[in-house]
Length: 289
Length: 281
Ligand SMILES: Nc1ncnc2c1ncn2[C@@H]1O[C@H](COP(=O)(O)OP(=O)(O)OP(=O)(O)O)[C@@H](O)[C@H]1O
Ligand SMILES: Nc1ncnc2c1ncn2[C@@H]1O[C@H](COP(=O)(O)OP(=O)(O)OP(=O)(O)O)[C@@H](O)[C@H]1O
Ligand SMILES: [Mg+2]
Ligand SMILES: [Mg+2]
Image (cartoon, rainbow over all chains, first blue to last red; front, side, top):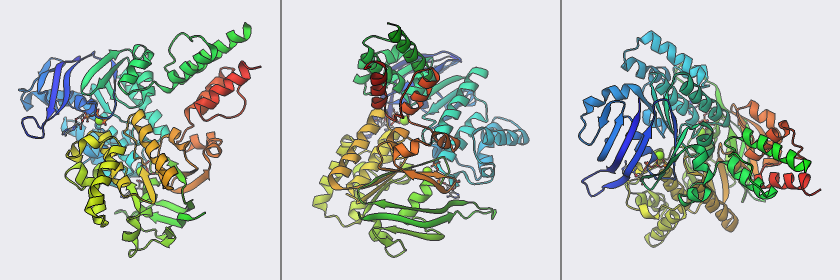
């Protein structure tokens, strides 16, 4: 399903003295099967934007299109049902989406809600507990008696369990240990490719945005200010800086190295591996001079 | 050197309904000295937050003792001791009590009998330190994730604590915001002798610490300076941790056939090494 946002505006508590405008004239188009990273400093509107993509928030201005459903300020809740079945969202705070008595029940909730028989849902829950690197014995524990990173893993399992075709991830690796971070980002990427998911990732990790995304959307003070490929977006350090964002570590290191040798390396190093091979090649050339 | 906090053979097990229980903390001992910056790292579920909760007497050890400011923590002295500790929990939502940002930050001060004339400037100053001065009358629960973390940090700073405990307090800040907050804390450490215990998964932040404590499955596995800890690359990876960027890049470079002398944990050191060994011959 393609997603598009046209001139989307959103105000929290609209019409009250506490009204707070969080989005202004946001435009974006997200193709079915693509991987989009949304970056931006604290409070720039990233989470607010994501909540529009499964109908949890309706735009106060403009239109959000998901497949052939259009969501405007007047859309009725009933019309959003089909969207909720297709869109899985991992919230910024895992506690906001955990609610069942046990971890097993929590993960089973989504699939059962969409008509999967209990036994199959239970089986999926146990597979996911393993896949997300949780200890086996968590299944019968309360999801609230877990460590922060374990709760995060349960929240992710609960979303993957109902096999959404659009996967929305709001800083899904915050609180994960380094191995968990790597493994779970790889898991999303694998599902993205194998199941043809449309993936939208909000992240403060410029490295993850550079490594995984086809498209990077930069938010600044409630507006969508840059859309482009990671190569395009991360090539322009000055522009990013004006939005209080920096470069992925590999690109920043590339720039330092380029200063050292006095010439550019050619392609932008979006991963550590790419950076190492570009540097190795450049040092070899220097040596041959 | 004065001791600020020590754990002496501490163990803890959470009660569970099915009677099956594993030790969340298993015979952990360490000492934190005045003015130190301590980083605590470890895989998810290794016991870091449990340690933090024991440091302020939210949980009491089933064996061993927790000593803060040279007093053994018990039900009687926890209130006095807590008034000298600033703590930021992993989930800021669990910490908010006020209905506005400024009330929330003022709450702990009021509880500790700070006079009103001092309270207002302290609230404003600490919110300004984390760049949240523009949000005084906002409701804490209605902020973005990173804004919530900033307010929680301001709450802890306003206490002007002797000891600051941060449990993944900057996990949702953008990189620049994270650097800014860390700088504020580091400046306080330098100027006021604040002691900092920071639980983190951010390996670059670990490099700033004076001492690192590595937890694994409830046990203290390693302790030492950051360079000493990161010399154990393979052991760290085996328990779910990793190396900082510059160390990882060094490894990739060696695999690509680039000669690198020594170990380098920061980008600056690594660039310098590339310069000296390849150009400055
Ligand atoms: N429930 C709410 N009520 C009122 N204002 C809100 C609410 N949630 C967020 N805001 C405000 O809207 C703006 C955008 O918030 P949003 O949560 O979308 O930011 P974000 O880009 O996700 O930030 P972060 O990186 O810190 O999570 C912020 O200024 C925030 O204070
Ligand atoms: N309230 C609780 N009831 C029962 N068990 C708990 C509770 N809180 C934590 N645990 C368990 O105790 C162990 C240690 O948890 P702790 O929260 O201290 O880990 P952590 O190192 O802080 O992990 P993370 O990096 O994920 O925050 C984990 O196995 C966890 O499941
Ligand atoms: Mg957010
Ligand atoms: Mg924890």
